[in-house]
Length: 306
Image (cartoon, rainbow, N blue to C red):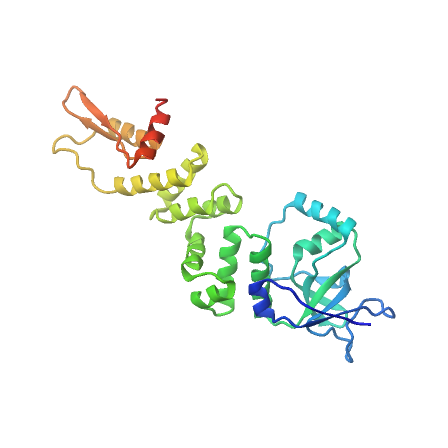
């Protein structure tokens, strides 16, 4: 007897897939489970127990990294409780399916030694496959920022979407979509740092505002080496931008190379612009360290062990 129930999907995915009546069925007279259908093809919207060996991975999967420990923990849970949340597949032949979403659950089920798992069976073309995989992962698996950016780029290029249309698909405003896409303009080493969690999205937004690659790499290394917070990184970027403007040293008092290097090194140490004011040829002068707020002053004083 078929069990009728309604799907309960996330807002974005539900809107894309359209909730519909579900049938759970299993054919005991065949080598693999199939949906009840006159053509032996699984009907769209049905849930079937499908042999894992019949499921091919999703070529449009935006996630590329899976945490091994988390997979093992999920596998242990599946051994004890079974797979509670079905994966989603599309049927491409009588006993052959292609994964739409749920690769983490599929991998964990394989680790758990499960032969058959429950799956929603959908009808989808390649564009829908890509959209479903992206939306499913963003909603449920927290892709890193670079994976999200690459997925957004693929949807724009392969599904011929404008940024506004993409924002509607993933329930994000255009500025958010734009900020993700701008990450892909950063140097590869910085993109890898974002992907691997060495710097945050906030750090990345600060780096985007640095025009030249050399300066982006310099700020990135400062963030890594000194453990700069997002706020400190923003201050460093602002100071670098200010330093790119011509320095207003008095005429005839331009700093020589040695003093210029000291000034630059101090600016790096305090993450703020520093000025050496040389008053005479004997080297008499003063060091000026400006600050923007009480918090900024406290930060500088901490660096001075005050």
